[in-house]
Image (tube, rainbow, N blue to C red; front, side, top):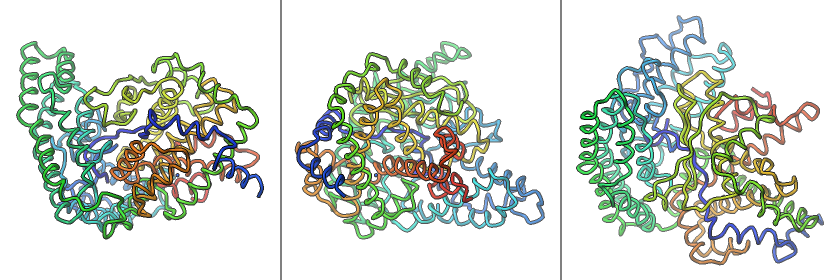
Length: 626
């Protein structure tokens, strides 16, 4: 069910904040000037990286789940819920154990879930993986037809609906040969695997053995990725040359300091912390890790570098997906997959533009009433706090509005300097299902986030964003299969939705909080519009520059960076902004449906308990149509 064999990393969206954010804020705050004056007058008068579920290893025997020893799907079983639960358990065991990195981040104690055998592998990645995934999905969908939704509990009905949707989406992905891209500038496997290896926990000696065996699988896996990229180039669908250069630079940086590499220091620290290992055993493992990195892992990254450098002159498209033969249809598929929205691209484009107008009008009205509001946000009292203090402030602040969730710990960590140029401003690593108490949030210090911007970023990643949503949902849902059903539109949309709300916890006045939230939403809408413009409407760099110049951007270097980032990460910004809009609209619809009884707390509790899902299903369950 997942595209890439890596566990969940929930990201903060990447902005060029240091270069353009403040120029945009200035543009939005200058009421009465230029286009903003015209827009206001017109209005007044009249938008983890996660482990692969349908891995190639399972796809080779798609009957494995269907013909299970628990007789799943047999009409002789009278207890529908018992049969369905058994089916889900077997499916989860099969998929969670498909690759070790996924299993380790999903479960701390796999044997408690009946998983005693697993492969120390990253899975497989080939051009025919989508077709094999589709065949597997078709088989499971056939089995699901044997379960009558009316005979299932409400929780199982919901899971059946979501599973049907997820598998149907997997089938749709089979139609696009060599369009998928595992190597992208900020969310590609080359930037995310190293972080996940650095965070790989050692609870016992078996974890160390598994980890070292996993390292030895990287050359095989990267060889498959290289072969896939060569096949993409032969099909005329290789990545833009500037994207290839960015990824090559990442790989060079990763291998630049082999003796003092962070995968050496983190391994040494974690192995030394295991008290059941003797000093000699610790030293032996540490030497083995160093040798594997130097002899196998770093050469695998060098192979990736050599392959991309060799293929970079075979790029035929340096712009959006729509310039490929089936690129427009693929983008439509990708947007639905990333956002969980069933709306057409044209509808999303209109909705994004309309919301931007509303936000700009609100900004102008607030500033007309109080021109000093921008100064208030710049002097926010939250600024001197450390990240840990900000998280504590947020956790206390949300207690009156959001459902109570289990006690948990969160550790703030910092991205290694070698990876700062390529990773998101911040990200949250999801905790294992059976150990929700320990969580980690990474901050990329190179982005220079501090004060109010850091505060809202931590709200996005922590409370009430990703960390809170993940821990709360898995504390109320006892179906582990749900952890393998990825809906980034829900998870990133929720984090963005509550990030904008978090301005109210920062000590700002109500109007200043509304101003900051509207400004941030307007910024995101520009990226969302540009994403659609570049990949669906065929915008060139000049077209993109013209669009942004309408809102005050003229820096050519920054505009080129924006264009190249969006080309390299199609639909990435939409999962944040469209996801946010879906939550925004659903909240408004719930208010209209229940004008006398609606509360924000009830809305939050409802959507959090349903959990990650496509928005058509979330909407149906929230509004009582299902």
